[in-house]
Length: 142
Image (cartoon, rainbow, N blue to C red; front, side, top):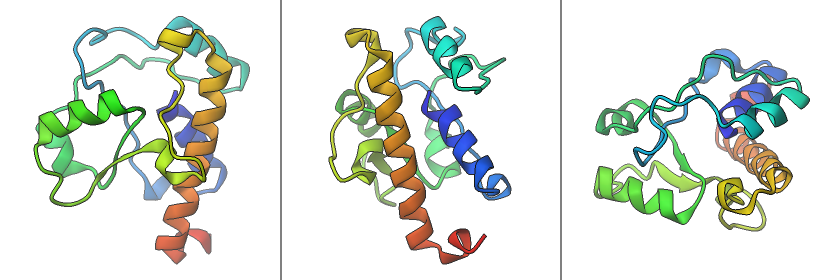
């Protein structure tokens, strides 16, 4: 969900050329599967397509390729830390760390409350983009 929400927000701000946004799993259970049907429906209701997306496994190369690696919850954060070891470049964070109320994103796999996840992802993505705009004024000038 966060991949597609962030892509939409970046596009709405006319910043798509500045970003490469992708998501990857920190576990193997869903590798190769499409976006979970209730999430697909929710994204569709908001005019966001996730067509063609299948889950892929996070790799060690991802750490070197991406500037930011953002986890949704503590469990995924621990998995990332196991995968990458020490975060020497300070790339790993939680999405909700970019908000006024740091916490885990509500996990709809367990809660079944997809709207709560939607709200968390919206808030986290907005906070992340605000953080980047403060850090890189050239983004906010566009």
